[in-house]
Length: 362
Ligand SMILES: O=C[C@H](O)[C@H](O)COP(=O)(O)O
Ligand SMILES: C=C(OP(=O)(O)O)C(=O)O
Image 1 (cartoon, protein in one colour):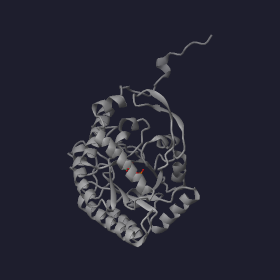
Image 2: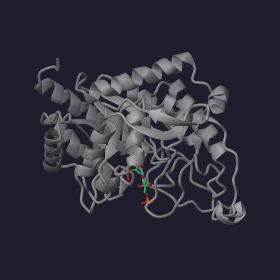
Image 3: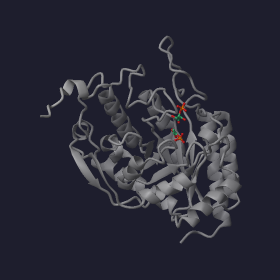
Image 4: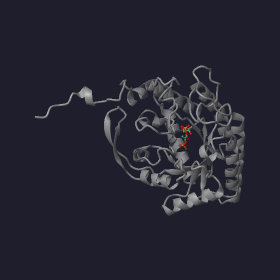
């Protein structure tokens, strides 16, 4: 006769502690997306899709800190960005990078949702609340927001505020993330893999473009079988990799060829940071200048650029023995505010030059 094994000896043997997680619905109840903001999100998503489709000849610019660790500094940044975004709105569609989930190569701080205390205490409930509150504040300032979706259940808590999303280089090959992208409501950028493989991101765009069925949670937090429609707004983000950049004209042309061969729209967003900058923020303006030159020379396949930028240039380590410098990244190094404004002006000028040399899109 078989006996039921003692559950305590077989279940959760490596789980130290289980803490109840708030539901998406409860978080939405406490921090609702007001009607005017919902309209702004819908308008933001539509505007991004139009730029991706080249129905709008502006350049999508996803710009902001590598990660948010201090909501006050992020909001100050948003206030400054809003002014520049308004000034350059004829040429640039500015979306603020408001990133709360950090995929790590090995280990490291995993972002504000995972660890809002920056100390490993892992208070995810506070993280989700802080993240959503900041997203609403940025929307109230009048900026669309972009973020990376890393954890497959996080989107139910925040995705209603997001106009542009990314699947990162480390997860672009994951079926879980491709399925997720197929059901997300906003355009999703697929990053090339850390080793530089663009084909993997092209596969991800194709996979996310069709319907999928997978287990998830609904907005009430109940386990649910999600039947998705497919995401037609998937696009490639070139971030360099395998020890070399891929923002130059030849690399861009090669990526557009791959997209064409896969029967996908020929459009790329260039990430000026990560392996394209060699993780040195001082290289970001050089990458942006190269992209600007390609735009000015008439390259219409480049529909967007990503910049890692914050109030102060550079980065700092999270060090519990020292106060953090205000407005400086605790993950990847960022360009500072003054450089950011110069780079955005330069890109806007390049868009105007491209517009002047090409027929207006239908
Ligand atoms: O964008 C941020 C980082 O590049 C990403 O989280 C990986 O960082 P890591 O290689 O330092 O872990
Ligand atoms: C982690 C990021 O980028 P990548 O996936 O390209 O490394 C990021 O943009 O924060």
